[in-house]
Amino acid sequence: MLKSIILGIVQGLAEFLPISSSGHLVLAERLLALNQPGMLFDVMLHFGTLVAVFVIFRKRLLNLILGICRRNPEDLHYAGYIILASIPTAIIGIGFKDRIESLFENPQVVCVMLLVTGVLLFCTKFSKAPGSEESKASSMNWKRALVVGTVQGIACIPGISRSGSTISSMLFLGVNRKYAGEFSFLMSIPAVGGAALLELKDWLSCRGAQSAECMNSGNMDLALLAGIVAAFISGVMALKWLLSFVQKGKLHYFAWYVWAAGILGLIFIR
Image (cartoon, rainbow, N blue to C red; front, side, top):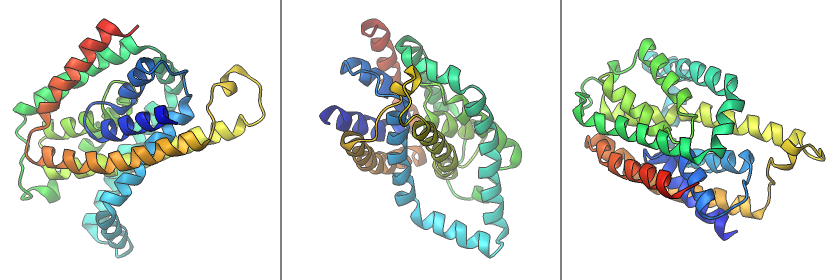
């Protein structure tokens, strides 16, 4: 159970900090000499951090829902952009599911992808994204939503930070920094929630099956629950911290850590 809690904390911190939660889970599992806990474990930890998004953005989500019900144009556009961004994410995530899952067993690939994430983060230092809310209403359009959704789909690769890559791409496109941070996490709701539901469906279909794939699918037990709770608590803390960094234009600070993690991983993890 202690190892599950540690992995939950790693997931919560790394999911919102732009350092790749999936990549850190792969490396942490290898460093802790854990048997591969299965995709159910990884995805359910993502579910724990997803709940953290609902908690932090509860007021924004409520206002968005009310605005949609009242047919407020701004809220309808916002919801439309989230749906539009989810399309390329779903196509990539579902279409390349098996190939992406195989990368979770290759820590060297994860480390290389961490180096790529570091480059993206460092380059935000030179972005010209506005920090004020003056251009907030016009920050997103359908083209940008498709680009960001595609980036989010690519971020299914372990080692590519979902939050780091999507926020970085929006900053490169000139999106307001506050808007970029908020939109990145709200657009994660259908992506992460959908992945969790699909994995849960696969796990339920494996109940009682004896195939090798099902034997490695993971189990819903007390240790997993403890990991989910740990991911939620650490996720709330990390999300508040990251939003502050994004609004101050200091996202590039995390590049140094990601580069260090990637290089050390390539040296010491086999």
